[in-house]
Image 1: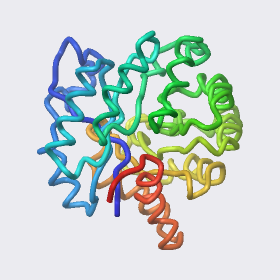
Image 2: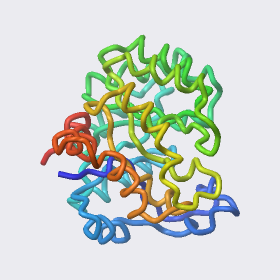
Image 3: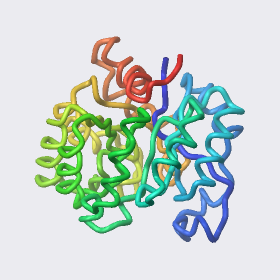
Length: 276
């Protein structure tokens, strides 16, 4: 089964979605399950994981409703206020829905030390009892403290989104590489090969630019802890869905059938506890 482990839906709201700036007009519209379903079918993708783009409980409710109405959405990574004293109550509420599989906070917009905050770590500490994954969305400069976070919660499953967004128009950064290697030594961390095309300045379809970065995460995490994700519709800022999929497929073309299956879906099914 092929699973796209990272994509988004939204009813576009210019106030709420102010992060979609003037350079992103192509995604300044609604993107709903009815838009994605034919794309997945055309590209031989069996299902997807819907990930939060807005930090509100209403977003989580919206994604769960999308998933309940569309069987190809296999799981939801939503948002709850991990800083709240009532975080456990929120998690209990959403976990009644079996499609609620994970939580994400947009840490890339926060300070380098955000993940070390006691209230944030209190929230992270509540996830394991509900069997929830935590998706890590950060920039490279956050990684040093992210390593400290995952060390503190060895039984919590973490998944790094977008390989931490290194600048792919530039040479491989030694600090990013060292931090990725260190992060990957923690077996409770997996990594999504996602969000690649939007980290290249003026991407023109050259897949070779991604090779050193994918090489790095393959060497660090191994095929058992890597997941394919499209980051649709954000990927449309740089490439169509088919191209995003082909970049990953072409990289792994000479790997065994079993290893390709792991990266393209089996790992997502296992890590997010998805029903087949």
